[in-house]
Amino acid sequence: MDLTQAIHQAVMKALQEQNQSADRELWVPVGVSARHIHLSPADVERLFGPGHTLHPVKELQPGQFSCEETVTLVGPKGILQKVRVLGPARGRTQVEVSATDGRTLGINPPVRLSGDLDGSAGIAVVGPSGAFTLPEGVIVAQRHIHMSPEDAERWGLKHGQVVQVAVEKGIRRLIFDDVVLRVGKGFELEMHIDTDEANAAGLRNGDRARVLLPKEEA
Image (tube, rainbow, N blue to C red; front, side, top):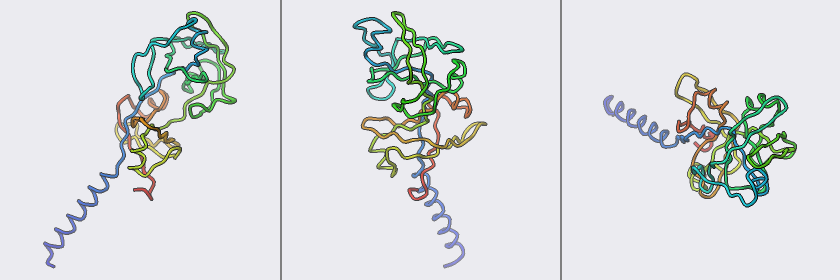
């Protein structure tokens, strides 16, 4: 084999490896979650009146939506107004805020996955037709990625797995640790972070970040 052929083969091999590497890059769109509340059916009626049903405005994930309705959160040190209600109604009321919101309210909500509410912070919730004190249920949502079972299988990932996600564009590049995969039927691929995290990385809704696949999967 002469030198020209050797160089050609080396170049082709490098290009092939580069293409294979690019094919294995999992980029996810980013959804920035502002403060919001999920209400139980009973709490919907307590805040908005008997027989009230939530009015959807925008679909988020399939079957999940933001609503016209808003509430006010009242803490020991401050209040947050016009906090968006998300639907549909759930079995248990849950409030998701950022750490900065927690300081404004004067509470210390733990970082938790959705639904893990035992021993979390409490808050007073005020609506147009009533109010109540929630003894626990306020969390800072742990950053996570929604993913369909088909996407999880394609990328060799599984529900509950913890990954890293790299923000590689802009002047505030960083790597998010402890990003939990939430795999479910009908889920659309999207990473959810709160406003504090988005500001730290200079991210907006619709920006993309790269999942750092485990070495054994890449």
